[in-house]
Image (cartoon, one colour):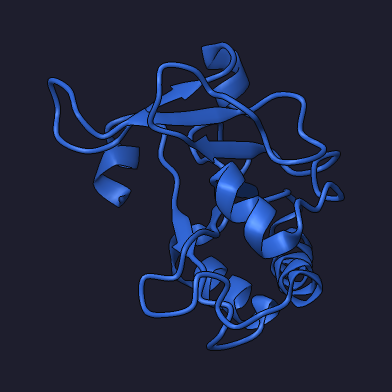
Length: 158
């Protein structure tokens, strides 16, 4: 992480949420304290809240849609209080619909990184009319997921 920064690369970090283990605020604190903070240097991206299917059990971590929205709000509010920036939400529309009831209330302040392995970005979660990042495939000439930024390089250096 620091090596990429030292050679001039733009870098960022994400937090894989586990809403069934601790509060959103506690997880935001953990994330910020361990490399997820943001700085106004033009080379550090805002932190990302990776909120998606639970690989360890119930898809929605045993939470109702309203309690999931409250957990996400708790994370986002604490991240903003600690860094002065809005975190990015990384999710899939199908998970968002299932686990938040397709809540639209974060779209006005929170950038969206949509996960959809397809030839088009498809339907976005409620409230968002556009995406910031789109993870569109996990195959290609390089190993790992591939993403597209919906903007210019100057837009990355915020």
